[in-house]
Image (tube, rainbow, N blue to C red):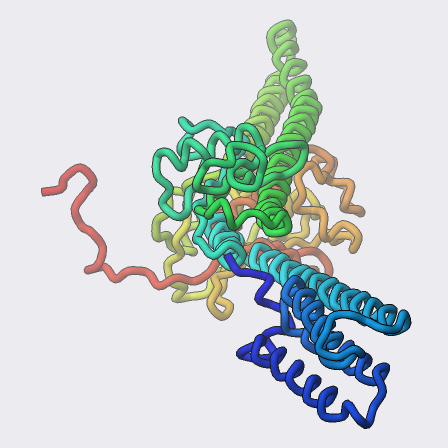
Length: 527
């Protein structure tokens, strides 16, 4: 441990006693050499000055003793009768007393100044140490790096490398190994002591007032509300812990890391609670939207089926066909809504894995257009164009086709016949762009940042007379964005200059493997 007493003005000289002796020798030369030329009062002032200068280098007790001997020598050599300790005049006795008292007062003031200067330097050093530790803890995100920063600070303060126990969560039990991290390779007995320190959230060891016979100092990493988030064990000599300020500084360093760990845990708990609340809110909104949007097609299916069951024999063939088509259309709507909802939930789940393979952009566009023409475009308004020579793209064909079909269906809903809908596939820089364009009324500026959010429905468009545009749970574009992001791409909206909107999926272009690099062995036929 660093000795603060060494940080005194005595460092001004390599041999402080030599300087003090030189001051006294010079003073006595002046007093004895000028004895016939100066009075007793002037010699007394010289003695007081020498005592003050010598006190700069000498310890307090030595300075007081030296001053007493100097006053006695002053009485022997300079005060009549000389060469005797007797004093003839009362004023000479008063002068000796004043010299001694004044010299001692000056010595005491200088000693007090040294103490205050030492404390000020130590406080400044401790404050700088706290600041440097705070900077190191703020820059380090890994708990081990934060522990290493505290270890360096404690070693700088106490001179011995500490051993640390850091908790990863709020379960301070020795059996819960994943809940803690150790630094400094503590032994079994050390760990027992540190876990005891954590559970009690109390310091013990030399200088703490608790179990002071131990050969090491145990300090908790205290957070808030009397809870410890780890412990530090520092081997120390009991005699070195007499200074309470060193113990206070060591505990303050430990508490700085403990408070940081407490804030990190509080932030994790808050984020978890917020995520749960948001998840619950999304689930509630999803259930509300689904229950509302399922009601209309279910009512239509129920009405058409009831009519066919109760009055099927009385209806004309055209009426029965119309009711059957209504049942098919509404059932398809329910199926589409269910597929989009399930895909949205699946893609938002952590750790989702896609079934990626190399696919032809032409075939992806063709499959999506054929399905859209079959289910949503009886008037065949969809036009498709693909740039020749496009490279293969790595994607989940089922999900990607669903995204394109959702975009096409969305464009058909919000553009009135006979306005066409275009699917354009082209290369743009290092991306393959799948663009679905409509000729509808476009999107109001205040809604262009919201349309990809879940549950944003047709009220953000205006000018379409298509009643189907007002139906749906508002999850179609959210699903499309999730599919694009899951493939490492991006779904963008661009307003067309001639009117309408262009929803574009920008998929990064990847270098497809050559044919001879692919594994020709079928699954399950490994040698």
